[in-house]
Image (cartoon, rainbow, N blue to C red; front, top):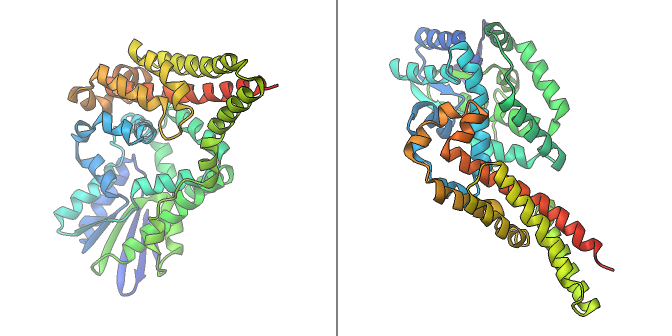
Length: 387
């Protein structure tokens, strides 16, 4: 094994592997990737991408294909918003340096074609990674993760090219990764270790004798520990099902509230039933409507959230956010032009609010949050009325 600059030279089973550790918003990384592939002329180029991320880099019209109604019905609103937030953070840094996020990966794809090398998408499907990471987090760490994402989007910290290049130093990267793992150790496995294993497996099993792998510098130290080891790809791609705790918690409020209604009605022969209904409906309706209003929902959507929340809070299979989102989408009718502007509008809160497509997403999330808070308040109020 040898290292020159940010290129690690490995040998495995008669193959030569050249791993280029990059920063994802670095012009120097773009140039280094092009130079290495041009000089080595590999049989295969492996990139830290999956099919979805490759499409995001190469298909400028991908937003036009989004169906807002399908996104809401398939309960992918939060996933899509999370993707937009992460993309916005990377684009903000990339624009400050004049480099498109992932430009070095795109350079690797184009360089592979120019030298006649086979292209291998070496990374695990992004949805599998996110779902396995999210499923590995506890309740409070999920709240911490949401806060971190919000800070990343709303923060406007400047970052220099020198800072970016410093991130490519292996020791600094390792230190950052270890510190992050100390704060949130559940992330280390699915987000970092599993992908190190997956990437190394993909690269060392790629066709050809001379292989160039282009990956983020943070992955290189971990990948080297998996050299020559077989990975259980099927297990690494397995999507986690809902935890038993989550499944139970979804039904806690409905069971408690309905039991309270039943007990109160039986014990008092119906007396006080209206008071209990009021205690359940008022916070549910008001908070779902209020949060929808704050998100800039249309009046009919606000009314929908107001009516739907007390009902949907008793049925975890549907939500006030879905009902409000579908109505808002029907009223706003996001156009292709709205989808085309997402890349630009995602860079600011005002842009997200102005864009008809992302406004629908914000309304759906707001109604969901408001309804959930209202359900907890209403459930506690109902229980307090039992005597």
